[in-house]
Image 1 (cartoon, rainbow, N blue to C red):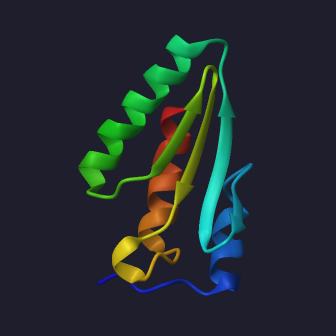
Image 2: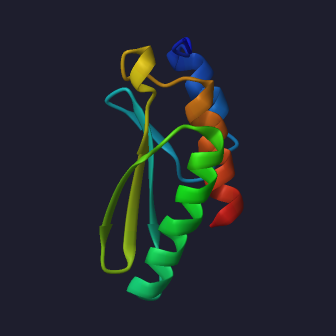
Length: 94
């Protein structure tokens, strides 16, 4: 079972992840694209990476905007290293 990170550890991790925020026991970021097709392609790329990591984000999409929130269900819906690792992977496919 993954262990929750302290708030200080989360803030330290987010210092290297531009645009990611910590709130309500989640890390999150909003991504903007030119159109729905680009947003959907991004979601598919994220999905493939999430499946590799066996860790799945909360995704919300409206037209050209994708909002992503990460927390770890088996750690009481708190932020763990798994979330930070997935956020880094998401940045690499954006």
